[in-house]
Amino acid sequence: MSRIRNQFFWNTNRYSFEGRTSQSLVQEVIHDWRGMEPDRKISLLQEIGDRFARSHGVDNPPHVAEIENTNLYGSFTQYINTIGIDMDSVKNPFQALDTIYHEETHNLTAIRRDTDPEMDPGERAVLMANRWEYIGDAPGEGEIDRNNLQTDEIISNLSAMKSVMQTSAEEEMNPDFEEYLQERLSYLNRLQADRERELQQFQENSEMLPTEMQQLKDCYDHGNIPFNQRDEGMEFAENNPYFESAAQLQVQMEEALSESYFLHMEEQQEEEETVELSYGTEL
Image (cartoon, rainbow, N blue to C red; front, side, top):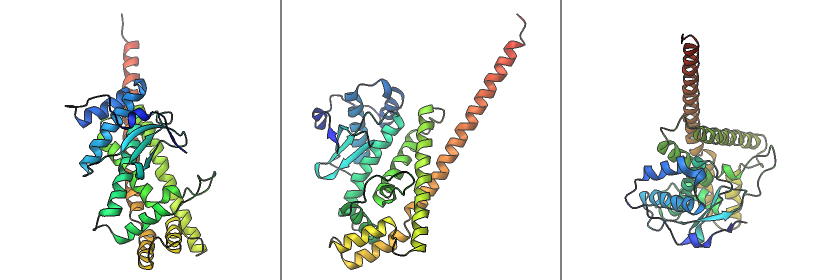
């Protein structure tokens, strides 16, 4: 259970960011995050989140508040329109950016699910099942992480990673950025591995439904979606396109890390050559 740490920050932003570009706000987070006061962190994330939301047509962006819950980076609570950020967990500035983009995307997805007439009906059914059927506690070691296999969660993860990559295109040499990329690449690797394990189990035993198929069945059994939506959702879940999107992003992140590795190697080689030249200089 998360507890809001500073109620004051719910409805008030002590700082003015008028005249500042969005990129300058991102750069402030990247370069000043660790030495920043908590209220400045919250205010910056509020402003970045507001701009992200409004760029996607949201007129009433969520409030951002500091919470106490070291089991997660952030959370979005739809019925009070609030994003919570645990500052003790979010130490890497790129993870801070990822968290605000991630939680804002949960809000965008909820709005699309409830209001977009052009949304694929199968995707809508899956998102309804994600919403109404609790997936269970955090997995034990070696178990499948079923929460991360939900479409709603995958959408937010992909959106956040893409946003961080776009706003941090010139940060390849930043150790914090490399740490962030490594962690997110580990997530993508686990995601694909868990997906393959689920599908393999389903092939071997048709009663062991993959996560979202089980959610759809439960959602239908509890009367939250009609029969036709259940079937549309089942088809979407079986061929979920977001796993292919995740695989494509996985390649991009691997390439970014590879480029960063070679840049480091070139820099190290230049330093070694400089040292050799200095040793050979007569004084």
